[in-house]
Length: 133
Image (tube, rainbow, N blue to C red; front, side, top):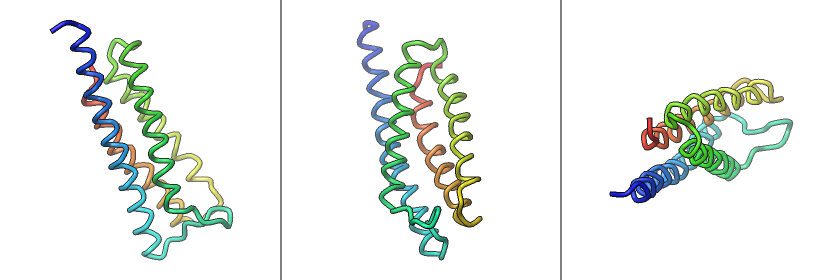
């Protein structure tokens, strides 16, 4: 195999995994939010409800941002997999900050944090395991 074929194969591999993880994470975060809401946890933030579709949309958007980050790191980083994990774990941790301070009840905050952690637990490993170490 030539370097171009190996690169295309590797790229297709992490892109396919990333897209599948994006769909899985979007479904999972929406399901978690729906289950929490069904259990009586409010999805109201600042007095306005977060629509369930918003969980899927934002999860998909930021998962695709992560996939774009992976594409950049494959081209620029010596160890794309390790750098991707380090960067995305930090970004996932930072994404929890707004959930901790949002004007909502404690249960709502916990539910929002849970959805972030669920998405990260699905997307980060799915992409990372396909990136060069």
